[in-house]
Structures are given as structure tokens and as C-alpha cells.
Image (cartoon, rainbow over all chains, first blue to last red):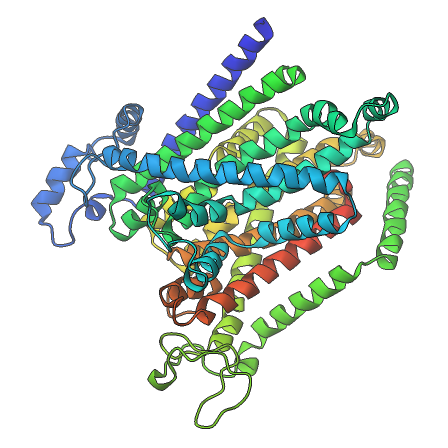
Length: 307
Length: 300
């Protein structure tokens, strides 16, 4: 498939450009502050110490040299040493990656498992009470801010009903509330898009044909509808996966989940700038890779998109 | 010129019939939503008049009091209760609406101005300018904006001005794309070509024909964006990166009440509820505007 090879190359190039933009933005943001040295040292550091660090970091060199050095280090995943943890910033971030991935994956599975069947039922039983309820909940789920959902879940499910722990990472019971919180928005969006995708296809001629030739309703749905409805669903799923990574910042903060998002916020309070940078870069990199995978999945599902 | 007047005249006629249909079929939820919004806006404007208490006045005697609907003996009346410092929740929610609305509207204006201009430029000029602007668009879409916001605020420090600028910058991409797409179709219309043929200036074409035709989608996007900017502001304030205490903001109140969920759920619950309803109502109005004005924007 030469077409697919070209498509893949194009996507890889785009992914690399996106990563390069992220690194550049991190660099520009860091320079926005002017001199990062006072951020990196305790407030009472002597001038000589500041000069030494400035030289060590290469801040006395021209800006384009600094940029080159920065890119070079970023490629190696080196964003300096953490002030708070006294070790390589990237190491600190890597330690938090599994927790964030676990949470993101759980919310994602949760969202899909609930939303796709809900969307299909809604579409098939269009206009029924079930449809109204599903779409009403989805509407609220899309409008409610993540932190409000999280806090209300803690209040009702943990404090009042005592079903799940309020915070921390541990067994599956710790995972339920954060996963639902983080997945709520994705769940709502996926349910709505699934419903409209299925509705669209139920109107198509080939579905009428399938019905006319006496195919059982279940098979009509399963064989003809789902494969065609898959494309808009995969799009939204991909978009939502990215949002999950962003939303993780809030969810992890609420549930004291030891992932990258909480680390980023804590590091801002600690003024641990290298760690903030590494967190931003790491999350952005995960986001870009996920988008790449979604694009490829697209190309596989619908050959027309390759061109 | 005659042909241009004639052609754009037909478009206005089409808009006219749409406007007529518009008036006839405003659904009930739109009335309900706009009434709710009106209440929030009025509360924000007249906050000093309608607030029962000073939103930042602390009172140790009145700490963590639950909502009281009826006046009781020896107890001050707090409709939505008080927080850990004895401040009246209702008053704080009312004052908090000022922050949400001011930041929300200002951010929409910043995003709309930048996005609208760049979209216009991108669509009308084309070529290398278009390429550069679209590259920026792709760049911003390449990663979750909240991370960028966190990075920038970590460096610049949280302040009201920074918050407005950052939330404003978060949304320009949507406007730019929609306006660009709209301009691309309009600039090839016969009446625009005719004006150009008759020697009409670029400015005239832009001001008289392109801009008015992009207004409808622009309005739809701006409404939907308002819901998003309000949520983003409250999220940043919740994380401690936005409005700083003691100024009341809905996100900040939720964050403060988090430590008292066990004993005083009302500190978090009410500001969050108002925030959720506001966002819901604004986005419902936006959805409805989109369906009425420009159904092709679905999914934008």
C-alpha cells in the first residue's frame, strides 16, 4: 500500500512538527519571565551563586545558542534538575506517568463502556423516555466542570454513602470516583456523537435494504451500522483522549492522585520550575502521540482519508 | 454596482425570512435560559445592592453555619449558609458572578478579535499568510491548552490581567477557522467578483460584504465560547492559578470548600451549582443559535 506509507510519513512529520512546537513554546514561556535564575534559587541566594548558575545554564550566551542547547536537551528529555526533589526533573515526572496513564485509561474505558451503548440505545429508541434521560444526563455532563463533578461525587459517594475512599491511589475502589470524574465529559460527548452517528446511518438506503431483506434488527445494527458509525466515534474518542490528559490536572488535584497533573500543580506552588516544564512537555508529548495513533486508526478505518 | 446591491439584497431577504421564523419558534428552554442568564447578569451588575452581606466580611460567630431559609432566634439569616470564615455564601456567589462574567466576556472579546482578524486575513489574503496562520492554529490545537496556561501562569504569576489574557488567547483558534472558512466561500461569490470587476476596493468588499456575512457564525461561536471561557476561568481559579483570595470567584469558592466537605457541604455545592447552570444555559443558547442561524456549524 504505497498510499498508506505516504499517509503514515505525512502523519509522522506532523507529529514531529507538533512536538517541536511544544518544545519551542516551553522555551518561549520560560524566557517570558526574563531571568529564570531567581526562580530556580532560594530568595536569599548570594549574587555569586546566581552568576554561577546563570553561566552553568548558558544564560550568558546568545538567545539562538540557548535555543539550540535547549532543543538538544529536550530531545534527550533533559529539562534540568528539580529544586524540590533534588534529582533530574524528568525522572520525577516519569515516576508519575504510570499513575496518570492508569487513571486516563480507566476513565476512558469507563466512558466508552457506558457511552457507546447509551448512545446506540438513545438513537434506536429515539424520542422515548430513555432517549430523553440519556441526552439530558449527557448535556449536564458536558456543561458541568470536572472539579464540580469530582467534589459532588466525593460528597455523595464517599462522605454520605461511604462507598468509595475520598482520595489516594490503591486498589480498584480508589480508582472508581476519579475515573468517573475524569471520564464524565468524554462520556457525555461520546454518547451524543454516537447517537447522532447512528441516527444518520439508520436513515441510509443500505439499512433500509438490510431491513427489507429481512435481516434481524440486531444484525442490521451490528454489521451495517457500527462499522459506518465508527468514524465519527473514533474522531471524538481521539479528541477526548487528549482532553482526558488535560483534565487529569484537575481530577488528580481533587483526589490527591499521584500523577503528572498533581505534580505540575504542586511544582508551581513549590516554584519547582524544571518539573513544571517537564510535566508540560510530557503531557503534550503523550497528547501528540495519541493524536497520531488516532490519525492512523482513521486511515485504517476509512481508506478515503488517506488522500 | 447594481448587480452587487441586487445580489446582496437577495441574501438580506433570505436572512429576513430566517429572522421571521426565528421569532415564531423560540422554544421554551431558550426563554428559561435567557431569563436565568439575565438574573445572573443583573445580580453581577447590582451586586452591592442585592447582596445581603459584605462578601469578604468575616465573622467568627457565624462560621460554617448551614443554609437557613427561615429567620431563627439569635441567629443571622444566611440563605445559603456561611463558609469557614463566617462569610455569607450567597453574597459571595453574587459577587463571584462578576468575576465569571467579566473574565468570560473579556476573554471572548479578546479571542474573537484576534481570531476574527486572523481568520479574515487568512481567508482573504491566502498564500503564505494563510499558511502561517493555519500553522499557528494547528500548533495550538496540538496540545491541551490548560497545560500551556499552567506553564504561563507558573512563570508570570496569577493576576486578574494575566487570567483574562490567557483565557482570551485560549479561544482564538475556533473563531479563526470559522471566519476563514466563511471568507473563503464568500470571496468567490459572483457579487463579490462583480464588485472587484467594477473596481470596488478590498476594504469595501471586506466591510460591506464579507464581514456582515461572517457575523452569524461568529455570534454562534462567541456564545459557545462564553460557556467555555467561564469554565476555564473557574478551573484555573479552582487550581489556585486564577483569581486569588479573598476576592470571591466560583472556582475559588469550590476550592476553599473542599476541605470542609465533611462538615459544610454548602460552601462548595452552591457556587458549583450556579457555575454549572450558567455554563449549561449559555451553551444551550449557543446550540440553539447555531441550529437557527447556521446549521452547517454543527460539530464546530
